Length: 475
Image (cartoon, rainbow, N blue to C red):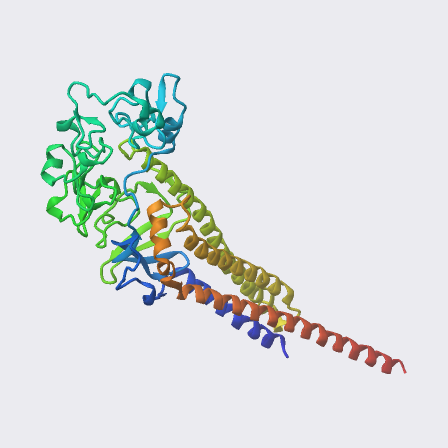
């Protein structure tokens, strides 16, 4: 086998590797969407579940560094007892859980009605016939069994069950139970709730607790979210975004997370609430997907401090948690990026080594094939390491959707009750092209090993032949 033939054998898999990697790097060709895992006609047999309409994220095409994502409006199952009301922040919980003073009584599990940020009320408010704790613990403890016959203070009247006192005009249908039998919050009409400046909760037939609350204002005031469901655009209030019969607060505009199936909340965005490595290129209406590309030189994700979050500690906490999640995925994707770049460079160097160290010499003699093998081996390690991180990130992101430390509790509940939606897509063609590059690199290594061994063997045979000739001449 001549040296030029050996070069041809080594050039072929090297060029195949370079081509496959270049195509995989530059494209985001199709991915397999597993339609059978998208919920369709759901029969609810469990009384603890109910249907909830939400957007489902479906990748239509995905490359190693870009993707085109569509969103489909589907019905999913959620816990019927799930509370949509905003959860208190860690700071608020710390304030509420701090010890009460000697002259104060601590509510057992709930907050004080007059001050939702604390569980402490004055001792004289215990067993006075007026409920001051949301959980009613100030009037239901065993200490209250020995109290004198109920006498209501001025301005208060007895509840229908004759056990508590309340202000009929102010505390009827105010979203807080002021009677032991909850009679003051029963049979509330939408008009009564509106007169009390509160939203009406359709499913619970109650008024929302928050004063100056409204339906279709983008804020969940009912535990079952009924005040924010089935909201036509003409019913949306204030500074909100209207889409899919829902109203969203303006803070969701250009936050990097799609809320509307027509992408209206993410179209024509100059800046994003959360600065991350995802650059939105175009909304491709022909394919009904939003195209994003990962940019690696814009810095790690941060929160835009110029955005007003209305002093919402809960939202700030979520944004910070989201930034931590994006930062980790950012560095993992950096590993993928540099792994593919390394594979391209090392493959290119292996080809150049053949050109510069072989074809530039006369008759292609004395080629150091071992240098080609070193570059090819490094390319193999880079590509396989990059795809290893890619697979790990793909699996890790699927697991993360049920991790409450990285997602909102609602997202976790959605994926726990609808497990099939975590398996609605598979790797794109670019991934398999990169796998093909690994295979061709491995073949290059085998060819390099074979050529080197054959080269050494032929040189040994030539040397042995020269020695025999010298011995014959000596005789």
